[in-house]
Image (cartoon, rainbow, N blue to C red; front, top):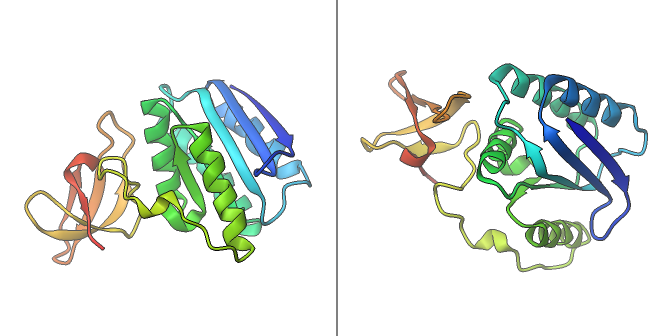
Amino acid sequence: MDFTIEFGGDPQDVTITLSGVASPEGFLRFNEARLSDQRFREGLLILLDASALDTSQVTESMFQAAVEPMIERERLYPPLGLAILAPDEQTFRDAILTRAHLGGSSSRRGVFGSREAALTWLGEQRAAAQGVAVTSLDGVPAPDELRAVARHDRVRVPDGRIGEVIGFYREEDEPILVLFKSGDTGRYRRADLRSVI
């Protein structure tokens, strides 16, 4: 796995490009580079371009190893916004899962299929931080099957019960663990869940 980190851009402050086959060693090198670079600070707008990253070999342990350092780093230095460019289906699903593990929409992350949409969203984040009113694409709901589900989200399962998302599994159909008021739990495919607001 290869990566580049470039500071500067418009509207982003940093562009990170990930490419090749995702690997534990690659994620470790990437996280070490981010942690050691003093230019990373709170309030940056980051474009993470994963369009050339192959995530088909990512396992649950690799996923956890990659996410844990991000959680610590961003607890200390939260970005103003991080747009993940993931145009292919597998990488998009992996990016949605990462976003959910890092807190969903409260993680200040967006996942996009096009560079134009990612840059537009980053510009909106900067404008909103400066107190400028923006008309966001966030007002147009994504189809349920593409909408991110995060821990603690309330969802309706196929039998009509409502529960809380408490975990995710990294398997072929990426089941989601839901806890019900009765104390029962169930594993469901994302496509079978409906968000409850």
